[in-house]
Image (tube, rainbow, N blue to C red; front, side, top):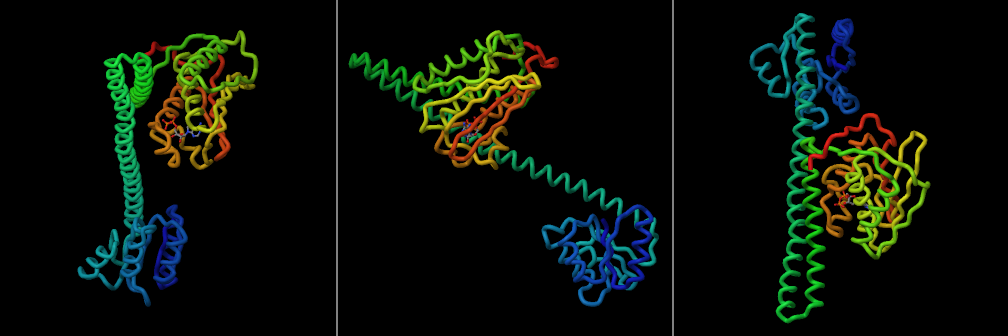
Length: 375
Ligand code: ADP
């Protein structure tokens, strides 16, 4: 929509008719004051502004429009029959105008200028949006690097400390102590290993190198293996199984990668539910011939605003930042793995009540790549 501003109604009618005849939508204003009200209410692609008007003149109007952040980018073309000296033209550009046309003017030339300015403006807006996006991504990456260095350093320092204690206990021949410190050191090294694996996976995803090694596998033994794995790392947590009987069911996919997703969901369910030691794993077969596996916890929960962003790279809920360790990478990697299986991930949660994280994969995907893992 183009806004034409002139204090003479006959000029407005003539120009708006000419432009509408060439396919533009137009709106009109009879004064500077009316123009300012209109630009704040409606988004215009371009303004054609008469210079000489009673009250606010065109230059003042342009200066005000250029000073509002909401309207600063609207291109302005000045039109004048009287103020045509170099001094006025200079003032027109200085007040924020993109062009200064002297009456009488050729309507075809005006149309070409309008089209050019609208196109250039669209390109400029797109570039600005891209710059903003990249600046934000850069800031996020910097923040991530500082979090990652801290997260990697913590288990490393602890493991080193426990090894020193084990060494001292060994000198004093306190075998039980040695064993305890070695176990603790081992746990810290496992943590470090998980973090490094997450970083490597995220790098693979970024360079499109995360590949699946797909085959048919039994869903019930897949679940059994994953639960055994969890029992070893979290012996105090009870895992309840519910849902349909899966015996005899097989799916086609990358079993290791899918186990990684399930383990990530379950370890998050344990980590973000410090007051509870129970997690439920539910399996369902959906009418669209897909398998849905959900992990249900009674932990801190997530607000609906945050839920939409959880599967993004580096995303961590602000309140849990600091209280719980993590890189904000796990769910992003899960979502990518499930995407490669042509499936879907999701979450349902109530703040303070708990969360259900689920993934769905088609039982018989025709299109999942059966490539060899790049590990
Ligand atoms: P992190 O390494 O931070 O745990 P994730 O990508 O696995 O990274 O999770 C992203 C964020 O989602 C976490 O920082 C946490 O705030 C939130 N989150 C994930 N799982 C749960 C859960 N079961 N309950 C509550 N919050 C969760």
